[in-house]
Image 1 (tube, rainbow, N blue to C red):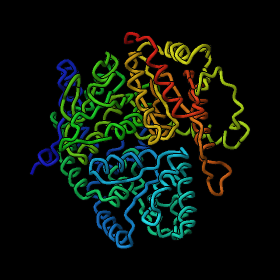
Image 2 (cartoon, rainbow, N blue to C red):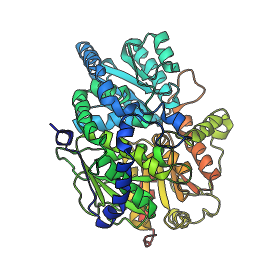
Image 3 (cartoon, rainbow, N blue to C red):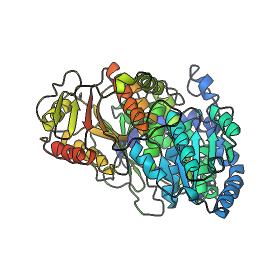
Image 4 (cartoon, rainbow, N blue to C red):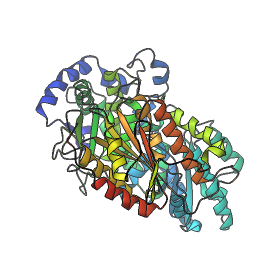
Length: 550
């Protein structure tokens, strides 16, 4: 059976003008044999400066073959655990280590508790589950991710206090030779899965990072690899109908015409090819791969094809439907999950070539981490001694330079939003509990509707491993609304001089400092009472007079 028939993979461009603009780019990519060279792992496709990095980052193109041995290992471990009454899987991981397993398990309809947060309330909720039935998957490519290490320490202690042998309940996924691999050996953790080190985190969906937690939770990872294998036959071909060439060329043509934002919506809700959460995975892939050197594609994940920003996208944005080409979609992709993983990876790497950047590095991600570490090393800076510009009910306002911070919360928001440049964007960054404070996600559509700005929403620190790269390295026309909140019950991190709450606060302040250093406005709103503050913030946004698109 032909690969495209098995995977159902296709890319359509309903917008005739965009299709016409993309066609010459497709022809050039075909004549230069870019698809087959990429499938063969050619590291020269992005120029001599990118070649050293690309030469050790292209194994993702053959994972549908090389990841096959994992299937039996995962199934055997799952059966072992079930035999011991262990059927609850908690994943501690950030960025590529959490986003792919989350979309896999959501698509498959199986339960996976994902910890990609430093919010003490959300971590406490995960700890409140039945630890006698729980296995923790600690997933970190570098082996030194501070959030993931904190989760491991907290759960190891909790296992012990519950009378559970922690070493038997911790599974590790990491790169060979990482500090975490050594630690796992020293601690005698139950099993260590060593991932292919020649795959970057955001391209790692079909490595052990994506497959192990999803497979242990009950997802059919063999089928996922079959889907990717079928797609690989199509995506490696130098043909004008190659979906990856069409998708990359459409992005490249749109960007050349000033459409630097890609608005993503899942449009096949509940259908056989429905991929819930896929835009969140694609968001990291696109943002970290292309957002650098002052250029790139800003992914904007929205709620539906009817959402503000998709239905009314301006000239600076390209709506992309993951599913049927409904509404204002200018591009639509369809296919199974395994096929679409590979499609978007191929297209993103090729788009990097069209934009003239290296799609495999992330030069600006470390800056926010370093700033957070510096704050943690200086406890006085996290002692709550900051003076707000103003206080309105349950909201403390910390206004950026150029914004007075005076008046009501609505006044402050209106003044801040007015700082957005033409064709700029607004990033809402919520350092909160994405379960208990889930209503915060409603802010995206409310703000987009009233401002006409393309508006992204990210849970902190999760987004630091995703769109955080674009914020510092991409087009410098963003403004940033940070939302932090008081932690009702903080959690100590064993053998570390900080709590989760302090770590979360340091991450917010650290990223804010880096963004400010890039000349970007950052308005921080601190909720002294989260529920009351969020309700107040929604009312304040709704009171803002609507303005036209920019």
